[in-house]
Length: 230
Image 1: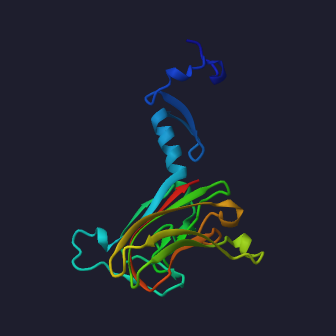
Image 2 (image 1 turned 60 degrees about the vertical axis):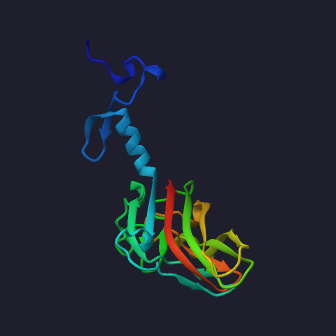
Image 3 (image 1 turned 120 degrees about the vertical axis):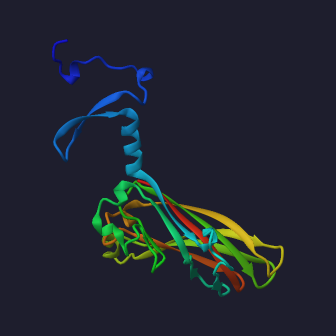
């Protein structure tokens, strides 16, 4: 077959394409034209924009003996939740790790010492979801627990004087009495927008997770998961 330009090749029908088909790709870093399977191309694209970061407490440590550490909540007071981390699972999108400044204290998008997640590598169109696994033991009957994400805006927005904002949800109504543990899995979603997007810890927004109970209580923080869609 005589040499042809790519534009002269026949087009494949949508139904003819499967994951094993090969595509011609140009690597900008090396300047070399390569081949790649459709499956690999899709997987790489997904990996660059989708992922998660998980923080698991000692509740998930098979060798842990004793009670999982708890935090004390004072009635009607917002308190930051910081799990006693057993392990961290970093499956962040590659876009979130492209900038070397995105590594905080060495734990990627999560700063263990501050209990803070960074929204590094995000775009204004990006979105996120946070999963919080807790158990709470209230000191009094008929109480309620609320959770919130407390955001610190990115460097550009902070220069305007707008530095923080919160999104809140009711997590639990505890009507079965005091001095027993209530378990909950809470999901909170948010969009990034121009107030939070950025490349790394130095210029992107960030958030911490806080709890507020209507009575004094002890709370066991078992896991955080930050799901990322860039």
